Structure formats: C-alpha cells, structure tokens
Image (cartoon, rainbow, N blue to C red; front, side, top):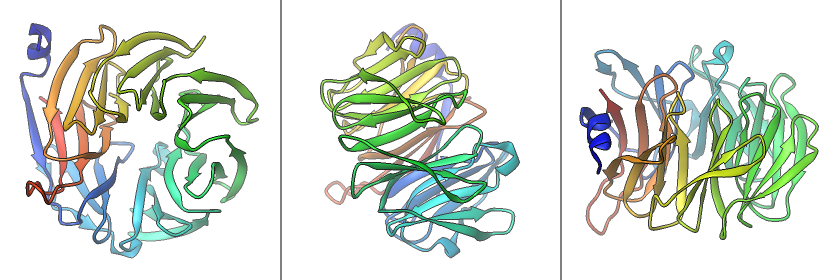
Length: 312
C-alpha cells in the first residue's frame, strides 16, 4: 500500500453484527442510513438500527418468512420505510418498517435473481432467473410498466442518476443501454471479454463495471468511453459499488478480499481480507461505511457474517 492509502484508511474499525441466518444472500441500507437489513439462507431477514453510539440488536422480520433471497430499501425519502424483498417463489414483498408488516405483494413472471429501485423510487426492476427477461414495475400502479427480453442472461440492472437511462449487464460481457422510460435501445457497451457480472453508477456520470475477466472498468456515461481500468482482483468480479460521494469504489470477487480504490487516481486505498466468499456489498448512503456479507465455509470453520467497515 502507498502512503496515501495508509493515510486515508489508517483510522478505521470493523463491526461484525450478530448473525445466525446462514450464508448471507443480500444486504441493503435504508435511504437515510439508519437501518441495515440482511437476508440469509436460514431464517427470516434481520434488520439493525444504526445510531451514534453503535447498533441495536437485530430485529428479525419474521412476517417475510425464510425464503427471501434479495433485498432493496426504497431510495426515495418519501418512501424510506419501504423494503422490497424478493423470495424464491415468484413474489416480491413490500415491507413497511413503520407498520412492521407486509403492505402488499408483487407477482413476477419467474424466480427473481435480482431487484433494483429507480432513483426516485417510482419503478422497481426484477431479473427473471428462468429466462432473459427484465420486468419493470410502476410502484404507484403496482403493475408491470414494461418488460425487456435480452439476448443473453442479465446479471444486474441499474438506472443513471437522472433516471433517463437504464443499464443491463449481460453474460455476453456487454452493458445494454436503454432510454428510460421509453426503453429505446441506445447503445451496446462492449465492457468485458467475458461476462459483465455487475454494474453501478455514481451521481457524477461515471459508470463502473466488473467482469469475469477480473477487471473493473470505469466509463464516462456521456460517450461511454473507458476512463480507467483497475486490475483490482485475481478472480471474476462479483460486486462493485460507489461510496456516497463517488470518491471511492469498493469491489469484491471470490479471491477473499474486498478492495477499495480511489476513483480519480485509481489508487488502491485499502484491502480487506475476508474469511470466505463475499456474497453482498453496499456503501452507506451518507458516510464512509461499507457493509458486506459472507457465505462462510465449512472447510476452515469460517462463519457467515455481516460486517461494517467504517472509516473513522
């Protein structure tokens, strides 16, 4: 690590949350950063309330049951208490934290491999794991607004900050870019030599992609040109996510490390060793805190965990 790396993250702490729900499947921060929710292979999702003095013991969302695979808190401040939780069956539950209950359900055309909110919270996208279809729900009407059939498997769906474009990361290694909400195909970005496993955007017009070629690419979204290539890992990328100010990019693969790069310079700021496969990763929406989950491993007795890495 360079001197800059040491200075930037020399003061930090890691908090492991109480977790008994098996391998972590997904995690999500609420829009104000006060809640962190995780889903696992055993038992219902668990939510922790984060406060200045630390965190309170996690609350199990028992009404959601034990089959939740994907989670996403609504990013809209007006609907900050709404959590979308996708189950193994063809159902997305909308959990209202204020009522501590499921407020309504969305029925999808297939199993849900991923879900994603639009920045305003008006739309919710779900990837059908049974075919190459992405469904976009209008949350005001609670019905499918539009659907897209893609040539190959879709791994991740994200909107840009202005909610004028939507990006689909595919197994072909491309990012398919569509106009929103018209869904007119704008361009195909040849992002990676192998599958493009993850995509994310910051508020300044930078897109990051992670591929099976073990590379992280940074793109200018005005002309979709590559601005930087990060040789961040030795294995296929699983997750990429920008910090709340777009300054840092966190990434994870199956090489037992979570890495944080500074976006402008591309410099490695910190490398976090993990005991087992990283299965979820997301920055806090308001400060430099990174939450990540792991699967655990019976081989070396590593236990599944939800961890918060906090730059202090």
